Image (tube, rainbow, N blue to C red; front, side, top):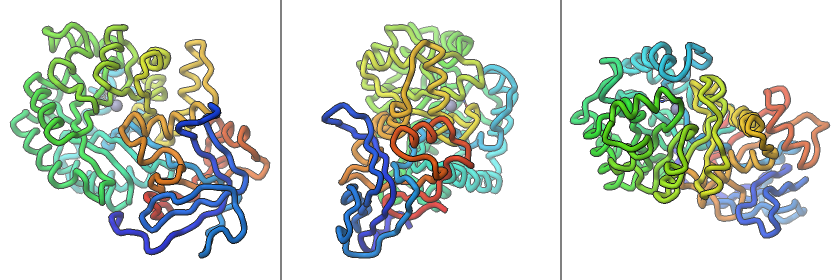
Length: 425
Ligand code: GUN
Ligand code: ZN
């Protein structure tokens, strides 16, 4: 369904809020009190400008007083953890053992995987997320069900089979001579499907649960097909120690991924809390990106990510919900937690900074910065309409309410579109 072109250009009227990717005067965002967004028959934005009567010949869908804005991008979310949000069973390694692994084992049942995949896509859309970068379980069948659900929902998604062949329960362990052919098969079936809305990502869970031969084979597959690589790095000190016990040949955590060839230039590493200056330098040199998952970091007590370390080296930073350690699919919760994270380190991020991070910034980090992330003409029309209470007017108030007062009674996602097609409700 998502591959079909639109029949005719369409236009939407509303307030409008968008990042300005290469802002000439340094203003990070643009707010238009009464705007017209025109979407061409190719699903791309033809125009986003102040409304002028008669400027568009054709029906205009009037969504006022809702605010039109780019759909949110969740750069890190775990599909098989949809039903365990809020399992406060301990810090990272204990939480994985007690809450995550038993739940992920249930995804060998394809009927269960299908049910949860429908819940997963429904919750993303209701939160205004139009692009997601997703970890599946280690089960190929469940990953196929996930792709089917993303396709049926019309979402833009980059998703991968979670690779793990050691230090995990038998029910989740898949040796590399099984996992790599299964991943190759999913690449054939889904990479580039939906007219390019869907991509397959190489997804080693994290260094402790992956053998060197598995990671090397995964890196070859990533390079052969130009795939995004996603994993976790330096989330928790005990995890860091487990990494070096499992891979004593490496000088530090980043060196594990580096030496096996996973830092391909399209690597997306989540958390990045406990990294040395050398590791940050190496991420910058290899063109890697990181994903900030502040809500998850608070929930598991993992620590505070220092955004300044990334920014000092121009390492792109995306924002991730990290559901199920993150407590909400809603990227507005992620923005609010990113504000708290920065405050803990003595920094203040503005609502505009946070909004840009969750849209254009995350698009850049996942390699889609020219395709989505803002409402610039020429981009694909992934946008949402968000309704605020009547007293919320103007740029500053809209941003404050969007980022900090984000419960559903205050700011409701009314509609979502991907490549110009309505996908929600
Ligand atoms: N590290 C390895 N697996 C996971 C996971 O599922 N969630 C988080 N937050 N960290 C991880
Ligand atoms: Zn994660």
